[in-house]
Length: 142
Image 1: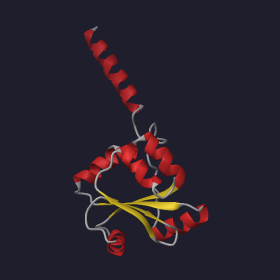
Image 2 (image 1 turned 135 degrees about the horizontal axis):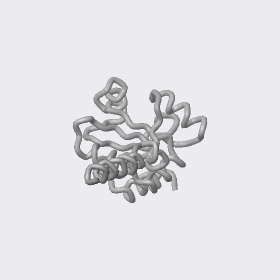
Image 3 (image 1 turned 90 degrees about the vertical axis):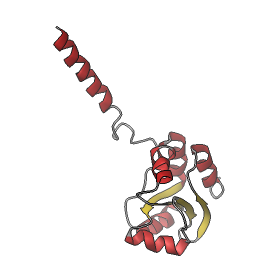
């Protein structure tokens, strides 16, 4: 009887933990564009949107915290997904190094709002709480 109870509890734990996987959270948080920088510029022009650009490093603790918290916030996601083409790129990758040089990245994370012509409209560095991140975007897109 005790063994059956343990198995039942383990099954319940498994079932409920499956609700917290990425498919359940799909609509929450920022949805990042999957494609090249040029493709993001084209999409931004076509949709008449700005680009939100996150330049990060894989080893950077504030970058990891930003991805784990603020980028997954539903209010942040609602605002950024509606108003921007969202791009995240490792500043130490080939394409990331080019963008980091072009836009003057000196620290990670560095966040930008870029227009479809590739012109910088806003820049901020470091970890941002969700409401601060929304206010950063609203400096360009109210």
